[in-house]
Length: 388
Image (cartoon, rainbow, N blue to C red; front, side, top):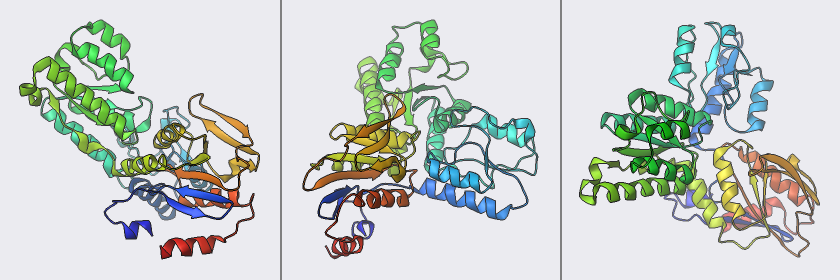
C-alpha cells in the first residue's frame, strides 16, 4: 500500500499499526530486496528441475536461518559455511551435480575449481546484480589505473567475492571500517613502511601490492550490505586526504568518485530506519539472521535510541516477560526479562533486514498481540491504514 501511494519514495516515515494497548511503528522499507527474492526463486526452481540430481549451495543462500533450514529440508546441501569452512570436500562433487552460487556471489578461484570439475555454474548463478555492479565498477577503476579500496568485512562471502574479482584487474585492499581507513591513510601519506603495511593489512591486499606505488590513485567500492553512510564517510575521508596531499586541482588524477556502488535496497532500509529514530517508542525489535551484515547495521542504528532486541523469529519471544535475542557486540544470544514495559500503550518500533521474509515480521506482530487484549482486530487496523 505504501509502495503504491509513494512510487518515488518521497516518504520514509513509518506506518503506525495501532491496536489500542500496543502500537507498532513499522519501517517504510524492510525485508527482502530484489537480489534475495531472485536468489530464493532460482533455488527452489533448481530443486524442481533436478529431482534426480544432487543439489548443492556454495554456502547459505541468504543470511536467514528459516529460509536456509527450509532449503535443507528439501534436500539442498551446503558445501561450506559463510566464513568458508568446508563441510563437503570438493572431491565429492561430480560433473552432473547442481551447484547454486548464492546472492553474495563467489570468488573466481571457486568458479575455476568447479569448472575444472565439469560442474556448470552459470545456470543457477544467483549473484545479485548490485553485487555485480560493484565488480564492474572495480574493473573500470582498475582499467583507469586506480587502486580499489573495498569497504567490507574481510570474512564475509560478498567481500571475499568482490576482492577476488577486483584483484584480477588491479591492486585491491580491504578496510573494515573508518578506524582501518585512518590506518590506511597513514600509508597513503607515506608515513608507514611497506613492511608495516604488509603486517597490518595481512590477508587484505592483492598479490604484488605496493603501498608506495598503489596508494597514489584510489577509488572506494563497498560490500553492498554495509552501512551506506559509513561507506560515504570513508570515501569522503580519502577524498579530503587526496586534496590535502595533491591539491584540489589534481584531485581527479588521484581520487575516483564511486558513490554509485551503494545498493538501493540497503540504502532504502537504512533511510527508513533513520526515520524510525524520530519516533518516541519504548523499544525496538529487529528481525533477521544473526549473521546478516545489513541487519546488524539496522540494529546498531536502533540501539542509538531504543532498547533494541535482535531476534530471528517470533519463537524468540518466549513469554510476555522473556525474550531471547542476539547481542551483536558480544556475538552471543542472551535472555532479557520484563522487556515489555507496564504502560497503558506499549510503543514498539519494528523492522527487519534484507534477508528476512515478511511473514516473520507478521508473526512477531501476532505474537506480541497474544499478550494483550487489543481493542482492534488486525483486519480493522489494515482497513483503517488503507483508508488514510
